[in-house]
Length: 503
Image 1 (cartoon, rainbow, N blue to C red):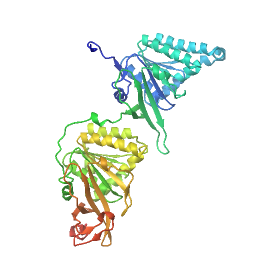
Image 2 (image 1 turned 90 degrees about the horizontal axis):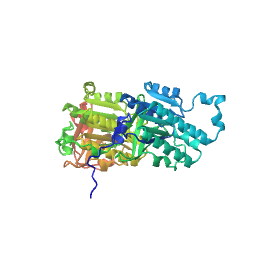
Image 3 (image 1 turned 30 degrees about the vertical axis):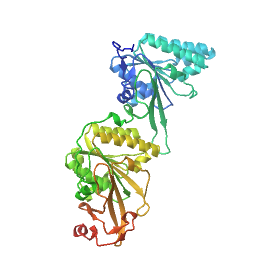
Image 4 (image 1 turned 180 degrees about the vertical axis):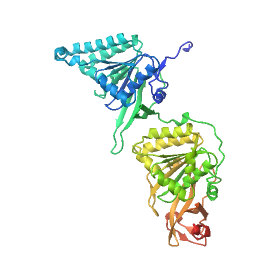
């Protein structure tokens, strides 16, 4: 006979006070259980613990913070830094000024068993007096020192767990991971375990991330999730899983705003695809992305532009000089122009910004300029590729047209990239410099398109005060992509045409 769950009610869940952490946990914490929140000093344990208690206070639950490691004054100072008030939270210091008095030093002279027993008794007595619904115990490292051996320590933790279960408390036990990292006693005892990590790179701010190591009876989001400690509390950025986000959209081709470029693409850009603009510095990649974005806004689609390299003012001035005025669209809210510092932004936070732009602001055209700087924000090329694969899959499933700009090393001849993202791209524009008639000119070609029958021609490409011009196919040139072509006929160049000459 198959087991049945008829009549079985799901266990009640309580919020951590951090919505995106609840999302990672699959809906929050199971009520009336003991959880371990572990991390090195400074990783954010106290801040998360206070948010947990404050959320309970809003819901009418009594909260109790039992501290062996921080004073009440220190906790209130932490709260003030986030503009919080702890008036509705009971703070119980197991080691107070009375315990430091010279006349009260018997605990120092007595055996550790007595000290440990007094501490556990103090915890239980405090809970019995206040009858809280949520408890934070800070921290287990002091309890471990009092126990002096692992057997006594385990027995006391089990006793506390049993005690809390009879009092209908949801408990967060904090641990600073000062013990042997291979000691997993706490992991086996706790109903759930959340690990916080922080790492400082050679440059930029430290990066923080968390992982749910264990959560009994709950389907949670595995892996690492970036988070930040901001004024107002902890902000968690759940790892992006593209398969969870899909919505229907129409796939009709749309124009780039440059007729000959549309011809090269086989009709235009397709919603739900991404385009890689690859080429050396200054060749026109950003200008092309701006022109395509401007066309998108002119047909009524909102656009978002993430600048990693160039300054916001410089980019706006350069676009205006080519008759591409973006200021009006910024003023109307059709364009979001974000200057991103890769040294200060974690990959998870960036993915969260992208999701917010698409899901909350209705963005349908998005540019990342450039992937070179985005790479510097990642811990390695392998992680960039994984991150970009998930993000591009998400954007494609949302029907967004995405443009990625990738700068290459070198000007002519041997041109190389920091990273190869060609296999992730639906369409690839290749930009090159080439020499002709004593001048350095620009060429453009579409080398890949998964959704349209693109042209394989190579055309001259020019930036003018009137915008972007694309010429006829360079049929009489050979070796354009090498940078040093051979001329075989009479193909007219844009530089020789009156319109281009006047500009």
